[in-house]
Length: 79
Image (cartoon, rainbow, N blue to C red; front, side):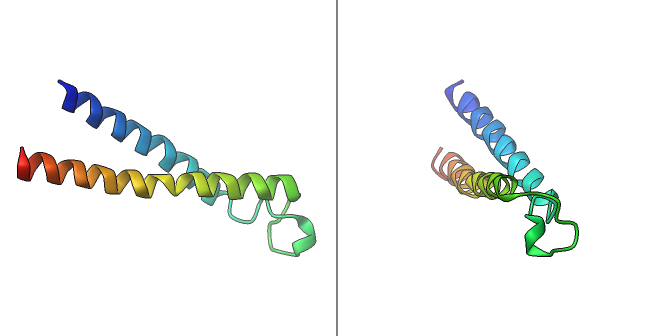
């Protein structure tokens, strides 16, 4: 019962952080300040910082993915 709860918590947390990071990447150059002269840039410094923050938050998904892999390894191989 404890294992199932831990697995569900890890999967839901992984999904949340993955959605946050993917959404930040989906905006591509839109939040970039117009002064940078990039195609599609419509933002300002604050939107650029916010996008960078959410991209960094999305990298937490990588660490959760490794934790999930270790969980499966330990559960399957060592019971």
